[in-house]
Length: 430
Image (cartoon, rainbow, N blue to C red):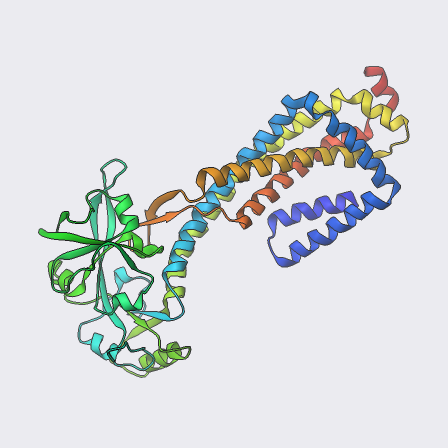
């Protein structure tokens, strides 16, 4: 029974599906029932109590296991929290009630072109909602990557300078001006995302920036709690000429109800003048986060696995030493009638308890140190996206599974050795 629950625990470390979780729950119930209602299980509990009571006397060896596993879990959860935070920021940027149009075959705004004569054609298509003034809620936009000095060390880094149409604000109601005002159309005025203001120097309201050999005035700061917070915004009809851009790169539109997306997609397919692709902004920004999130997960898993190997060897050495030091105690238990299974279970329960403590400690450290920690990285348009680490309960659970898996491997062989220890030899050597 005990080996069944151990093998299931190792399986759950590698699999996060509902089937795996259900299998672990069933196996855990069976294991606890075995502990509570069988003679071998009750003997295992009593033997485990003896070993756990002696942990303070072996605090040095025990701390090696706890600290080693805490380090593995802390690093793993922190790495995964970075990926989750980046993904969450981009996921919040889009929704199912808005859509983005790009040139057919384009994967991002950087390699898309929408000509100025196509913009009014798109605005007239069915499926696009209209504002209170009766005008379509469609914003032709373009994006320019510019360099600004970072607050950290003053080195230049990329930031996205976005030009939006008059409907850009209505399409994104989550954008709120928290300082100053919106830019006036036709003027070289900029509003700054709070994330960009935290990341770069010289973005206070009233300051002037020299971009494209022209002076631009910062007139406001906005908050959106998504990737737009990492951007600078201005009027698209001012940004285009400043950078000699005669076309737009994308169009973002507000969809007209639940059927708006299907209507818009069908209308695009039926108009040969518009060779454009359309997708909901939720799907578009979700796809932009997939590559980096996957890379971070892989790196986190590889680094965690390397550290886990070291933690396993640390647990093996500590538990072998603990078994050797408790030879007389284990031999006495065996002489009193404790068979191999209760002894193995007792040693494993002791190791798993230390692993659990290490996992909880590592997850707690990751949450205290990294949850909400603000960083930036290159996004889909090769500009900095500011985001926060996100240590979620799911990531903490992943860390605990890794901890228990390390405890399983690190305690199994010492436990088997304890069970096979000859009684007479152990008493004589002790």
